[in-house]
Figure 1 (cartoon, rainbow, N blue to C red):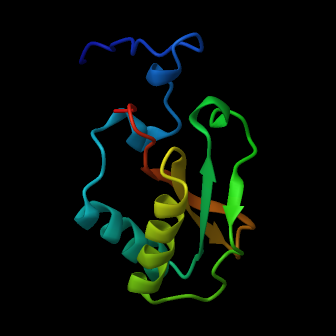
Figure 2 (figure 1 turned 120 degrees about the horizontal axis):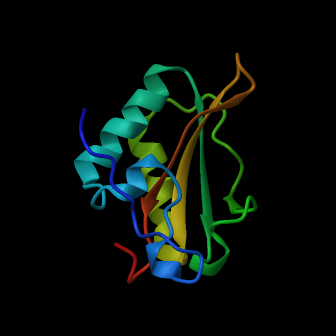
Length: 119
């Protein structure tokens, strides 16, 4: 069995806070983000974009970027909206969500753009 390591994430150190599984990995490349959007679309989930200030990101409330993109299947359209959100909120984290209509829940949620200074 491999050794389990403690990750030094603390509430008192806002730069160490993590938000989901992918946040423990290096920033996603544009190709990796595209593949996540393709996966959400392939599942038939409705994509949505949210953003939040880093100091508020550990809470459950994030700002919605427009409405969820119900039925949107064009990957480039979704990526363009995410980029627009990031461009207009450069100091915020930006999160991509895939809503699963069948299960009435989020099928996927990940921070795709991190605020400056957050690795």
